[in-house]
Length: 95
Image (cartoon, rainbow, N blue to C red; front, top):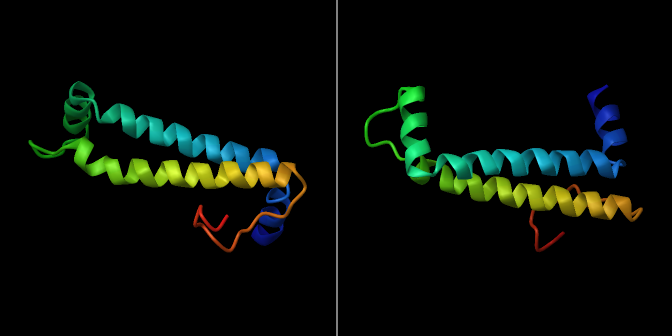
């Protein structure tokens, strides 16, 4: 059943676009958490130890989400043009 849903959704550009937008939003939230003031608030709210740096912890995750968002946006464009997306690779240079 899950494979059928995935197969149908991968043919809809809007599904790829919505996932790209979700990842961009999540990346934006991480970016906002890197601000020193917000970082201190978030560290306290999460009960993390003194000296924990949201900037250090989230920078690589932010970059990963940005890359994934670009990948899905590319796939949305490809599907909108009527081309089957390459779902076997996640390398932007190959896509």
